[in-house]
Image 1 (cartoon, one colour):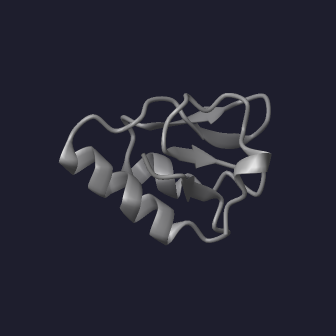
Image 2 (cartoon, helix red, strand yellow):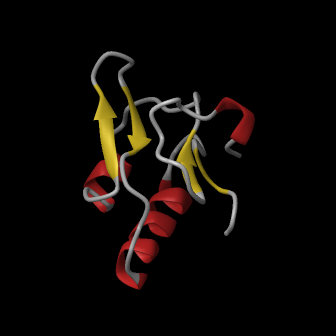
Amino acid sequence: MANSANKSPKNVSGKFYVDDQCIDCDLCRELAPDCFARDHDAGTSFLSRQPTTPEEEELCREALESCPVSAIGDDGE
């Protein structure tokens, strides 16, 4: 389970985030490319933009549920 205390510093503020468990598998960026981006220096993903539509929110939720190392979290509203 993702830990909000270990959030990537590149995450934008909001309910979804990526923590330091990320293994850069690219799955979240494939599922929700408008919300996730790659930190090339760290070799990890981060939330570049919080979802703004119900469809994007669903894609972020799918990324959270599909993450192989549970590095994506949701702190709620």
